[in-house]
Amino acid sequence: MTARAESDQGVGRWRRAWEAIDERLGLSGLAYPVPAHANGIGYILGGITFFGFLILAATGIWLAQFYHPTPETARQSVVYIMNVAPLGDVVRGIHFWVANIVMATVLLHMGRVFATGSYKRPREANWLIGLGLLAVTLGLIFTGSVLKWDQEGFEALGHNVEIGNLLGAFGFWFSADFTTSLPILGRLYMAHIVILPALGVLLLLAHFLLVKRHGISALPTEADAAVDGGPQPDKGGSTFAVHVVRMAGFGLLMLAVTTVLTLIWPAALGPRPVPGIEETKPPWMFQAFYPFEDWFGLSALLWVPAILFGGLALVPFLDRSAYRSPKRRRAVIVIGAVVAVALAALVVYATFTVPQAHVQEAL
Ligand code: HEM
Image (cartoon, rainbow, N blue to C red; front, top):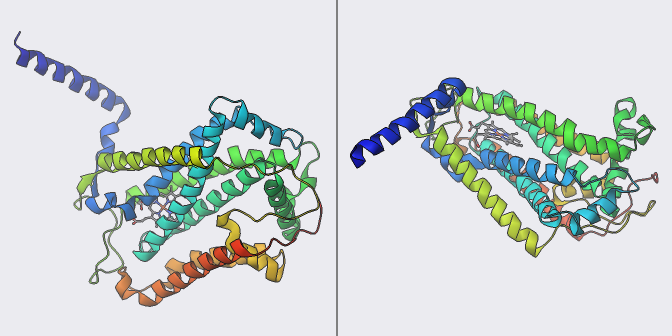
């Protein structure tokens, strides 16, 4: 047999194997066209976030092999992860840094969707689902910060309990008294590894199904009307396979960058918690709310996020112009930019203020 015939036979074998797999799994269904601009950085931020979540899930599963969620043992098990568990300190550091990057990419993704008016018909529901994902992301970071059970985590838990009190009858889950059979740390751990991830997966499925159903929004132009008509298979230019490979590339880059970051700045662990004192500040993604706590007391932790999320939820219903181009939506863009700059300024302001006590009840 000639070399050519042998190689043809080899290719034929691979094709038959692929066809057999595809017949059973329907993988070629993923080869649908996506617009070329979907591979640009602005339109791939959601995908980068998704790959960040995959890294968080993998590193989180490793950490869960060594973490022990009781008030007596939690901090010591984190010390064990850092000093004894195989690759424990690196995996913990990657988990910490990826969580920070994911928070940033979620906000940037939302900013892109906002700037390009991609929340307009028919994508209003997906904007609302996105807000659910934002809440889940914040919830994961909040519960994660409590788990390490150092002074910062303990004070965060104090806020959790106070929020429960403020919610009255609806806040029972946040209260330490809800059950005496399991410390509240155990329930927050369950929220971190089961409840919030499960909710996140459901929301992500809905989010992705709607992205598939509507197609990724076309690049806005000044002449563009808001309604861009749902799926646009003719507006290809790239394929989903190329899109996923690009996302995965960014995911690997994130893994590499966070590994280096971890080696330079390992994830911190504060001192053993001392009940009754308040001397830490929350991580940066919660710091915009911190000055409101100083000015208006703990109740601000309820109404400030409620106003923010409520305002964001109303965006698609208030911005009803026929255009998606930022140039034709100047007022909306200016309001969005003012809110974003104000939040960033509050984070900077909170960074330089001296920590104050907000929680009344010692745990
Ligand atoms: C937390 C995790 C999130 C993940 C993993 C995620 C993932 C994605 C992905 C992969 C896309 C496809 C296009 C792109 O990447 O830009 C997308 C589109 C979209 N996302 Fe998200 N998203 C998240 C959060 C959000 C948030 C917070 C919002 C807004 C409140 C949002 C609103 C939307 C909308 C409206 C689209 C359609 C955009 C278009 O067609 O141009 N998403 N999301």
